[in-house]
Image 1: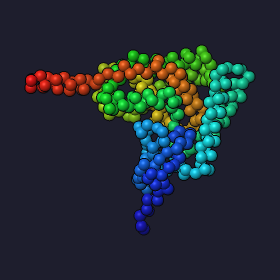
Image 2: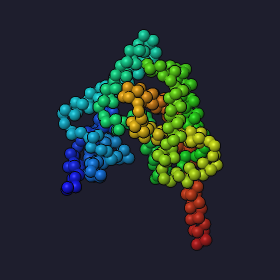
Image 3: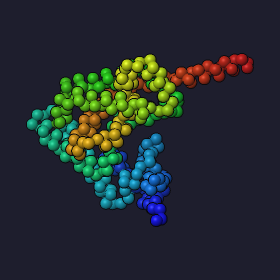
Image 4: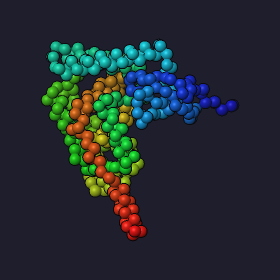
Length: 298
């Protein structure tokens, strides 16, 4: 029997396309095509986005740039805006409208979830926080800086502040003030499990090993802070897509995660400070050796 041939790519390099990023469709360009393990993947650049957001995606996330799909893009955007508006009305706290806002929000979220493959679900990072992810990447991978550890404001304290805030100000229509403890506990649990294997850049691993040795009985959420917590939300969607939740429960959970991110986005400066990034010890030692060598040569 002849071996099964790799599928023919649906899209070509340089082609203008639409691509799912989370529940929404964005205009994009196909930069490269790769066929791996009998599957086709595309390197996508989102139009108008920093190239750091370029990513390899499966064919299931890419659509032809056509009027029909542009209409689908507009419908998804409209549903997302209605969801945000419903959340805003719920946050203003009119008691008779809370249940109605909750139902509309839930319906819209479920509609969005039905439009993308479950394995491709992604948490939507607020626009106010996306530049911080890029800045974090550049500081660590390009400038060789590391977040000082233990963090001055760790993940545990951030989550505790969120729970107090949500209980004091109420939810967004889904009685989130009563679920805040469970939401924070879930975020904490995923952070502690995923930090080591999934959330660190390679040059951060020596520091990670040192801090583990120095604080063997402290969970990661007690050592790391906001930058690493924000990285969690880039990856947690994929992890949650493999859980046994039904679509409605998963939609509700994502709504809770988005509420927490909006809390961070309401005042990013309270959680993110570039001064928390320090020169790595290895870089300091290398600079010292270079200076010493130069002085001897002189």
